Image (tube, rainbow, N blue to C red; front, side, top):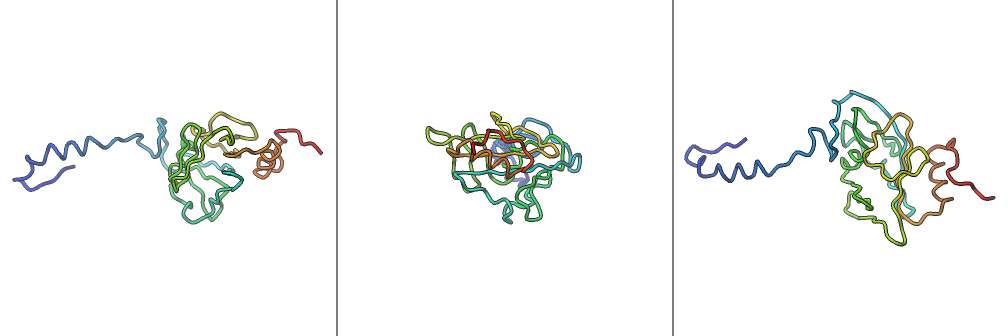
Length: 177
């Protein structure tokens, strides 16, 4: 909406229209998905997750990450469980609500630090113990286990991370004694 004194209205209207038209709404909901999100409390699912960057696990139990979005969030100082309270909210929406992003081969932290795949380190995604090409558009379901990992981790290291999400998970890779 544009308001101005009567004698300034017509003179400033073209600039106001330009400003209004410059705003782009990506989605009626939050985030960057083309999916249409359900209203708050249209669903309630939980997933266990971890994001490990160069062998350092992001601590989502910190206050700055708690309850940042009513539709999908972590809460109660638990940094390992995502709560989804609306239908069709993808994992990327959760990250975006915290100022994080996944763009192509890069994971971007809320402080702007980028972890991009290269010859020495890779960005990998695991869903329920299986490597997947992307996790961004995945809508979490009850009991999902999500691992985002960046580095040059060995299969054994990755398996240990997966087992930390859920000790009953079958080993992804055979473990040598």
